[in-house]
Length: 405
Ligand SMILES: O=C(O)C1=C[C@@H](OP(=O)(O)O)[C@@H](O)[C@H](O)C1
Ligand SMILES: C=C(OP(=O)(O)O)C(=O)O
Image (cartoon, rainbow, N blue to C red; front, side):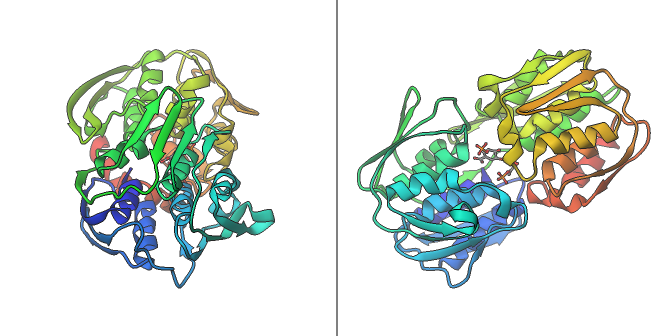
C-alpha cells in the first residue's frame, strides 16, 4: 500500500503526508520516479511528505525511470504515464525485465497510449507516450490487482467513464485510496467504474502494517514449539486476509482483534500460537486473497497432516521469480515432500525438515520463507542473496531476532 499512497499523493493537488511502519525499496522507487517528474517529496524517517501541483503538472523525465524489482510500481506507473502528454522510458532489474507488461500495455494502448518495448513490446525496457485517453470497459483476462489498478489510474485521465470488470475479487487498496484522496469510484458487483478528469486532493494518512509481511511471523509462530505472538497494527482488509482464513482452516489457533479503521482500511491485532495443522485444498477465488503468501502456505503444509493441494495459482510463475519452481526447490532441499503442478503444488506432510543451503532466487518472499523455515529445521538454513528481502521488508531480520529472543 505504501507505493500506492506515494502515487496518489503525487497525483493529488496540495500536500500529502504519509506515515508508515515499513518503507521498502519498492516504495522508494516510486518516490524517485515522481521526483524525476518534478514532484517535491521529502522523507524523514518513516514519514513521506509530498507537495504536488497535481496530476496534470508532471514533467517529462529526462532519464529512464528505474523500477528495480517492483512489478506493482512499474505496472501502476504505466497507468499513470498513459495519461501524460510526454515520453518516458521504464527500466527494471533482470527479474522485472522478464515479467510480462503486455497485460497492462494492451488495455492502455486501447485507451490511446503508445508503448513499445523489448520482444515485441511486451517487456521492459519500455517507452510510453501518453496523452488524451478514451475511456474503456475492460474485463480482466488475469486476476490481477496490478492490472485493475493500472487501468483505473489511466481511467482518471480519460474523458468519460472507465469500467474494469473483475471476475474474481482482487485486493482493493487502489479503490479505497482513490476515496481517501477525495476521488469517486463505484463498484456494482464485478464492475468498478471511475470518472475521468477528477482532481484528487492531498491528505494525511497512516499505512497499516502489511499483512503479507506479518504473515511470515504468523506462520513462524504456528510452526515453532511453545510460541505465542501478538502482532499489532496490521491491515485486515478482507481482500488480504485469506492467509489467516486458510491457516485457520488448516487448524491454526489465530484470533483477530479489530482495533480501529485507518481511513477506509480495518486495522487490528493478530494473536497466534503453536498449532497442529492438517492438509487442505486451496484454489479458485481464494487464490488472489493469498497470492503472495503461497510460499508460506507451502511451508506450513510440510508440517500439516495429510495432503495440501494448491491449484489455480499459475500467476505465481510470473512473480519476481517462478514461485512454483522456487518454492518446490527450496523446500525439497530442506527435505519436504513437494511436487510442482502446472498451476500450483502438492505437499504431503508432516515431514521433519533438515537444514541446508538454499537460494532466495533474488525474491524477497522466497528468502523470508526460507528464514522462517529455519524455525523448525534440524540444522541451519543458509540463504544465498538475502539482501533482496529489503525490497519489501528492510528490518525483517531485526524483527525476527526480536521475536525469537
Ligand atoms: O496490487 C498489488 O499491490 C499487488 C498485487 C498482486 O499482484 P497481481 O494482482 O498482479 O497478482 C501481488 O502479487 C503483488 O505483490 C502486489
Ligand atoms: C511486491 C511484490 O511483488 P511485485 O514485484 O509484483 O510488486 C510481492 O511479491 O510482494
